Length: 147
Image: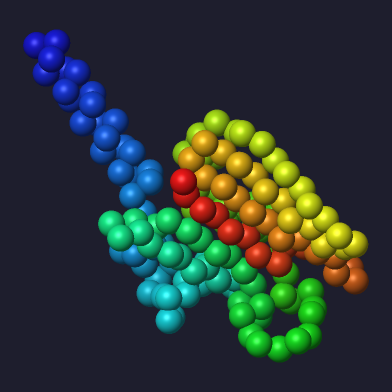
């Protein structure tokens, strides 16, 4: 009887792990709609691309303003998103409880631009920040990589 209850608990934990970390194309399609050339619209004017493992599980995410995908040389506030919006989207993709233990934060900057790296046991998160004429700490892109 004890073996059977342990087996049920093990199965529940494994199922939960697959639900948490087993993000697939179908799950993103349900949440964000069908991608356009592999690009999901996660907020108005903000898009996400997803790279998948050979097992078809989401492995890496890139979130950026849609206007930043254009090949123009102009830099404007439209090519950034607020830190609050970027954080909300990251929390949707990989909630804090699913990241594992916080390991470290590193910041590298030059002038009005910086890259923030947040390292957890199960994921790494990179935020590229820059200033705009109206605001500091605008996010050019966020990258999330599962380990």
